[in-house]
Image (cartoon, rainbow over the protein chains, first blue to last red):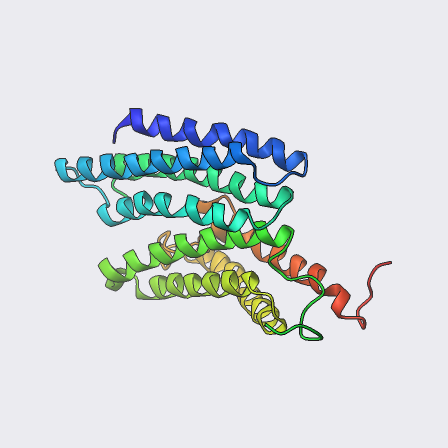
Length: 121
Length: 146
């Protein structure tokens, strides 16, 4: 797709993931840094959604369109739910929720790349 | 949800359960979306595999919701859902290895969930462990280990 956007989303999700890991190890809940991190991730996946749809429309290659769209939209849905669910627990498990969310977003970007690259299911 | 005897000592959504529900929720979303695409676009290619895929999605949704609730009933529902999940991943995983043509990489449970880092295989064990652990104080007839 657009490797610049992809790389940005991976970096933007892995940096707060590191901080989330620190919070988990210290048995601390979600703090402002993680909330800002989640907001930045959300902006990044929204940009990715727009860029992805534009690429899809402009491409004549054989891409699994629905699956591709599913990942784009899924990535947009997950962070808000993760924040809402994670803030309810004021200890390491709250931070662990966001840690998982950040890692899942990074993995989803890699899957998007695979789906774009190859004809597969 | 009423207070009192119906309330388990530790709701399944608290503590580690918070994380568990997150992982289940992600699988519910993933399996559900995948199944919707399969049923909508290529159901006749492999009806059995795609129905199993839809079944897996339903199991994950039920497990997610029941773990996220906090009643004795939701705990029981979670037990059933996660037990079915465990049976499903073992059965489909084994079947997909024995007859790979019947399961062309079509469900989350194929090859014991290898396409998802084997998380689908580990998840039901963690789920059952958590149900047991979070509910133990409410079941005095079971050995508490102390």
